[in-house]
Length: 331
Image (cartoon, rainbow, N blue to C red; front, side, top):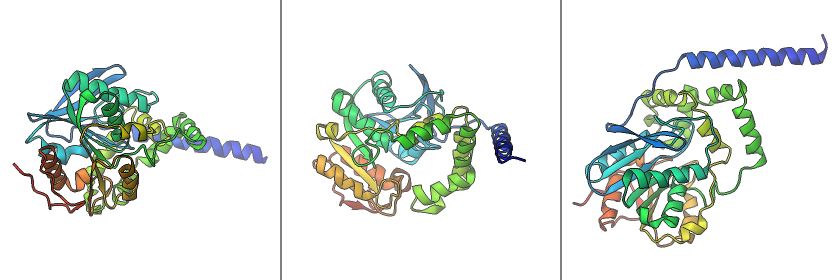
């Protein structure tokens, strides 16, 4: 048998095997449920229905989660519950994540910038505090700089847009996008990356400082949300640079009070990145939570919530490094 024929047969068998795996994973579909103890409401936006959760009364706070393979408003759950005792808190499932629609489109920084601006205008309807993580923090900076009447305070959790995720997509990322969006091969690659072993590894090694937080329940929830119809398109856009956004110029013009927070042991965006933000915006409040990884709002929810509550009331007296459990809210 000729070498070319063998290659074709092997490729055909591999292709068929991937298709079988994709069908089996799709057959294991389970409907997604809410992880937040709050009313889920629908916001009809131009590109689809966006779900959000709202709880509490008082000054509004909008929480915008980070991006990734199984992202969602659940990343903000511990802080959401605590701050809802003092504020009217909104937790957003970005388009492409959580209960929100997941259309087969390219998700770009411009799309999410507009979604955040429209959500604040149409749903909140008045100046709001925004607590945003990762690229979502970059979108919040743009909104605060260009439409300052919509944002009263900013809390940025490990923001990007200065040292990381600031440039255009690379040729490798553009090629990767073509592969991940291809039929059969793309879904197969996504299914591998969103398998339970892969999700558990990500949580234990890239997200949390305390690996015990990567519980079976959390991994199971992540698997369910990562296997909703259309779940791969938003993460593909994130991985391949479509959410990259340079914010240095807008950051330098901010007039609102700003707090920038980091997990001391964050791996994806190391705490050293905070120095670049200090050079551009020295007037901001900078805080680092020890023994926390990528989600300080989750690992140090009590201390983080108290810090935000105190800061909004002008009572933030903490040191630069705050250990989980150290800060108590002041009435």
